[in-house]
Length: 255
Image (tube, rainbow, N blue to C red; front, side, top):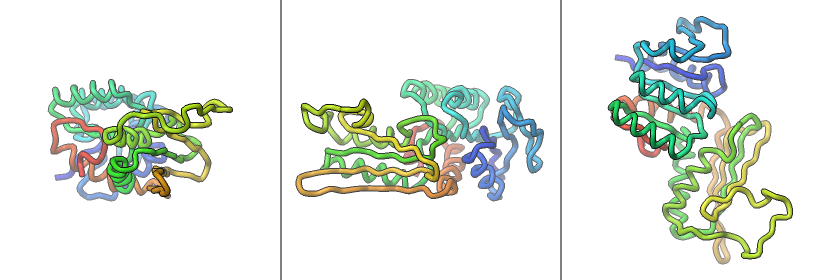
Protein backbone atom coordinates (compact mmCIF):
# COMPACT_ATOMS: atom_id res chain seq x y z
CA UNK A 1 0.00 0.00 0.00
CA UNK A 2 1.37 3.42 -0.96
CA UNK A 3 2.16 6.22 1.51
CA UNK A 4 -0.12 9.22 0.96
CA UNK A 5 1.81 12.50 0.83
CA UNK A 6 1.08 16.24 0.91
CA UNK A 7 3.64 18.81 -0.31
CA UNK A 8 3.54 22.35 1.09
CA UNK A 9 5.45 24.89 -0.99
CA UNK A 10 5.36 22.75 -4.12
CA UNK A 11 5.95 25.74 -6.44
CA UNK A 12 9.43 26.43 -5.07
CA UNK A 13 12.58 24.76 -6.40
CA UNK A 14 12.79 22.28 -3.53
CA UNK A 15 9.05 21.70 -3.71
CA UNK A 16 9.31 20.91 -7.40
CA UNK A 17 12.13 18.45 -6.77
CA UNK A 18 10.00 16.78 -4.08
CA UNK A 19 7.00 16.71 -6.45
CA UNK A 20 9.01 14.91 -9.12
CA UNK A 21 10.48 12.47 -6.59
CA UNK A 22 7.09 11.54 -5.12
CA UNK A 23 5.48 11.17 -8.54
CA UNK A 24 8.24 8.83 -9.70
CA UNK A 25 8.05 6.48 -6.67
CA UNK A 26 5.41 3.74 -6.87
CA UNK A 27 5.47 3.44 -3.07
CA UNK A 28 4.28 7.04 -2.66
CA UNK A 29 1.00 8.70 -3.63
CA UNK A 30 0.65 12.48 -3.87
CA UNK A 31 -2.77 13.50 -2.54
CA UNK A 32 -2.50 17.26 -2.02
CA UNK A 33 -0.44 20.36 -2.83
CA UNK A 34 -0.31 23.63 -0.90
CA UNK A 35 0.72 27.05 -2.19
CA UNK A 36 -1.02 30.31 -1.24
CA UNK A 37 0.24 32.15 -4.32
CA UNK A 38 -1.10 29.95 -7.11
CA UNK A 39 -4.42 29.93 -8.93
CA UNK A 40 -4.02 26.34 -10.06
CA UNK A 41 -6.74 23.97 -8.88
CA UNK A 42 -5.07 20.76 -9.93
CA UNK A 43 -1.65 19.54 -11.09
CA UNK A 44 -1.22 16.11 -12.68
CA UNK A 45 -4.54 15.07 -11.16
CA UNK A 46 -3.54 16.22 -7.65
CA UNK A 47 -5.72 18.88 -5.98
CA UNK A 48 -4.08 22.22 -5.12
CA UNK A 49 -5.04 24.23 -2.03
CA UNK A 50 -4.31 27.86 -1.12
CA UNK A 51 -5.03 27.51 2.60
CA UNK A 52 -3.73 24.70 4.82
CA UNK A 53 -6.95 24.64 6.83
CA UNK A 54 -8.70 23.22 3.75
CA UNK A 55 -6.46 20.15 3.98
CA UNK A 56 -7.19 19.15 7.59
CA UNK A 57 -9.41 16.22 6.61
CA UNK A 58 -7.34 14.92 3.71
CA UNK A 59 -6.57 11.21 3.76
CA UNK A 60 -2.79 11.60 4.08
CA UNK A 61 0.04 10.27 6.22
CA UNK A 62 3.02 12.55 5.56
CA UNK A 63 3.33 16.32 5.20
CA UNK A 64 6.41 17.53 3.29
CA UNK A 65 7.26 21.18 3.94
CA UNK A 66 9.57 23.28 1.80
CA UNK A 67 8.05 26.70 2.45
CA UNK A 68 9.62 29.69 4.26
CA UNK A 69 10.87 30.22 7.83
CA UNK A 70 7.97 32.64 8.38
CA UNK A 71 5.30 29.93 8.09
CA UNK A 72 7.17 26.65 8.69
CA UNK A 73 6.47 26.45 12.42
CA UNK A 74 2.72 26.98 12.05
CA UNK A 75 2.65 24.56 9.10
CA UNK A 76 4.42 21.86 11.09
CA UNK A 77 2.14 22.37 14.08
CA UNK A 78 -0.89 22.17 11.79
CA UNK A 79 0.41 18.93 10.24
CA UNK A 80 0.82 17.27 13.64
CA UNK A 81 -2.57 18.47 14.84
CA UNK A 82 -4.12 17.08 11.64
CA UNK A 83 -2.48 13.67 12.02
CA UNK A 84 0.18 14.09 9.33
CA UNK A 85 3.79 13.12 10.07
CA UNK A 86 5.87 16.16 9.03
CA UNK A 87 9.04 15.97 6.95
CA UNK A 88 10.36 19.53 7.04
CA UNK A 89 13.27 20.97 5.09
CA UNK A 90 12.49 24.59 5.84
CA UNK A 91 15.07 26.11 8.21
CA UNK A 92 14.85 28.89 10.79
CA UNK A 93 13.26 27.01 13.71
CA UNK A 94 14.28 28.07 17.21
CA UNK A 95 15.24 25.51 19.85
CA UNK A 96 12.05 26.39 21.72
CA UNK A 97 9.90 25.78 18.64
CA UNK A 98 11.53 22.39 18.02
CA UNK A 99 10.94 21.44 21.66
CA UNK A 100 7.25 22.40 21.42
CA UNK A 101 6.79 20.43 18.20
CA UNK A 102 8.57 17.41 19.64
CA UNK A 103 6.29 17.46 22.67
CA UNK A 104 3.22 17.74 20.45
CA UNK A 105 4.40 14.85 18.27
CA UNK A 106 4.73 12.64 21.36
CA UNK A 107 1.24 13.61 22.49
CA UNK A 108 -0.10 12.68 19.05
CA UNK A 109 2.05 9.56 18.74
CA UNK A 110 3.37 10.77 15.39
CA UNK A 111 6.85 10.58 13.93
CA UNK A 112 8.37 13.52 12.14
CA UNK A 113 11.59 15.12 11.01
CA UNK A 114 12.97 18.64 10.81
CA UNK A 115 16.22 18.45 8.84
CA UNK A 116 18.59 21.32 8.10
CA UNK A 117 19.89 19.25 5.18
CA UNK A 118 18.59 16.14 3.42
CA UNK A 119 21.74 15.38 1.43
CA UNK A 120 23.34 12.20 2.78
CA UNK A 121 26.81 13.65 2.17
CA UNK A 122 25.97 16.76 4.20
CA UNK A 123 24.79 14.61 7.11
CA UNK A 124 28.02 12.62 6.94
CA UNK A 125 30.03 15.86 6.89
CA UNK A 126 28.35 16.94 10.12
CA UNK A 127 29.15 13.61 11.75
CA UNK A 128 32.78 13.69 10.57
CA UNK A 129 33.17 17.27 11.81
CA UNK A 130 31.92 16.31 15.28
CA UNK A 131 34.45 13.48 15.42
CA UNK A 132 37.32 15.72 14.25
CA UNK A 133 36.48 18.36 16.87
CA UNK A 134 37.49 15.93 19.63
CA UNK A 135 41.07 16.26 18.44
CA UNK A 136 41.08 19.61 16.59
CA UNK A 137 38.93 22.05 18.60
CA UNK A 138 39.94 25.18 16.64
CA UNK A 139 37.40 25.32 13.82
CA UNK A 140 35.54 27.73 11.55
CA UNK A 141 32.60 27.05 9.24
CA UNK A 142 32.00 28.58 5.82
CA UNK A 143 28.60 27.94 4.27
CA UNK A 144 27.78 28.98 0.71
CA UNK A 145 24.30 29.18 -0.82
CA UNK A 146 22.36 30.74 -3.67
CA UNK A 147 21.50 34.41 -3.29
CA UNK A 148 17.76 33.78 -2.80
CA UNK A 149 18.25 32.01 0.52
CA UNK A 150 16.54 34.09 3.19
CA UNK A 151 18.21 32.93 6.41
CA UNK A 152 21.85 33.20 7.45
CA UNK A 153 23.68 31.30 8.70
CA UNK A 154 22.18 28.17 7.19
CA UNK A 155 20.45 25.56 9.30
CA UNK A 156 23.14 23.09 8.25
CA UNK A 157 25.91 25.37 9.58
CA UNK A 158 24.08 25.89 12.88
CA UNK A 159 23.46 22.15 13.25
CA UNK A 160 27.13 21.46 12.45
CA UNK A 161 28.23 23.94 15.11
CA UNK A 162 25.84 22.37 17.63
CA UNK A 163 27.25 18.89 16.99
CA UNK A 164 30.82 20.21 17.26
CA UNK A 165 29.92 21.99 20.53
CA UNK A 166 28.98 18.63 22.05
CA UNK A 167 32.61 17.56 21.58
CA UNK A 168 34.41 20.86 22.13
CA UNK A 169 34.70 22.98 25.27
CA UNK A 170 33.62 26.60 24.88
CA UNK A 171 36.50 28.99 24.20
CA UNK A 172 37.00 32.08 22.07
CA UNK A 173 39.14 31.55 18.99
CA UNK A 174 41.47 34.18 17.60
CA UNK A 175 43.70 36.72 19.30
CA UNK A 176 42.54 38.06 22.66
CA UNK A 177 42.93 41.64 21.41
CA UNK A 178 41.35 40.89 18.01
CA UNK A 179 39.56 43.90 16.50
CA UNK A 180 37.05 43.90 13.67
CA UNK A 181 37.82 46.88 11.46
CA UNK A 182 34.52 46.23 9.70
CA UNK A 183 31.64 44.85 11.81
CA UNK A 184 30.92 41.23 10.96
CA UNK A 185 34.30 40.58 9.37
CA UNK A 186 34.90 37.62 11.68
CA UNK A 187 31.47 36.13 11.08
CA UNK A 188 28.85 34.94 13.54
CA UNK A 189 30.01 33.70 16.94
CA UNK A 190 28.65 30.45 18.33
CA UNK A 191 30.39 29.10 21.44
CA UNK A 192 33.60 30.77 20.34
CA UNK A 193 33.50 29.30 16.82
CA UNK A 194 32.90 31.42 13.76
CA UNK A 195 30.39 30.86 10.95
CA UNK A 196 30.72 32.74 7.66
CA UNK A 197 27.83 32.94 5.17
CA UNK A 198 28.32 33.43 1.42
CA UNK A 199 25.39 34.21 -0.89
CA UNK A 200 25.99 34.19 -4.65
CA UNK A 201 24.02 33.33 -7.79
CA UNK A 202 25.02 30.01 -9.31
CA UNK A 203 25.52 28.27 -5.96
CA UNK A 204 23.13 25.66 -4.58
CA UNK A 205 24.30 24.47 -1.12
CA UNK A 206 27.91 24.05 -0.01
CA UNK A 207 29.78 23.91 3.28
CA UNK A 208 33.38 23.82 4.47
CA UNK A 209 34.45 23.02 8.01
CA UNK A 210 38.06 24.10 8.50
CA UNK A 211 40.12 22.82 11.44
CA UNK A 212 43.50 24.23 12.42
CA UNK A 213 46.20 22.92 14.72
CA UNK A 214 49.92 23.34 15.28
CA UNK A 215 51.54 22.87 11.88
CA UNK A 216 48.50 21.29 10.19
CA UNK A 217 44.99 21.83 8.95
CA UNK A 218 42.00 19.72 7.99
CA UNK A 219 39.21 20.82 5.63
CA UNK A 220 35.95 18.91 5.24
CA UNK A 221 33.69 20.00 2.38
CA UNK A 222 30.35 18.98 0.94
CA UNK A 223 28.77 20.27 -2.27
CA UNK A 224 25.21 19.93 -3.52
CA UNK A 225 25.34 20.82 -7.20
CA UNK A 226 21.66 20.10 -7.80
CA UNK A 227 18.55 19.93 -5.60
CA UNK A 228 18.07 16.31 -6.60
CA UNK A 229 20.87 15.61 -4.08
CA UNK A 230 18.36 16.21 -1.27
CA UNK A 231 15.70 13.83 -2.53
CA UNK A 232 17.34 10.60 -1.39
CA UNK A 233 17.08 11.88 2.17
CA UNK A 234 13.51 13.14 1.72
CA UNK A 235 12.44 9.77 0.31
CA UNK A 236 14.09 7.95 3.21
CA UNK A 237 12.46 10.30 5.72
CA UNK A 238 8.96 9.79 4.31
CA UNK A 239 9.28 6.04 4.68
CA UNK A 240 10.79 6.23 8.17
CA UNK A 241 8.63 8.81 9.97
CA UNK A 242 5.47 6.72 9.54
CA UNK A 243 7.16 4.00 11.65
CA UNK A 244 7.92 6.34 14.56
CA UNK A 245 6.10 8.16 17.36
CA UNK A 246 8.30 11.21 17.91
CA UNK A 247 9.63 14.10 15.85
CA UNK A 248 13.44 14.35 15.60
CA UNK A 249 15.80 17.13 14.53
CA UNK A 250 18.40 15.99 12.01
CA UNK A 251 18.36 13.27 9.36
CA UNK A 252 21.12 11.38 11.18
CA UNK A 253 18.49 10.13 13.64
CA UNK A 254 16.79 8.18 10.84
CA UNK A 255 19.91 6.70 9.25
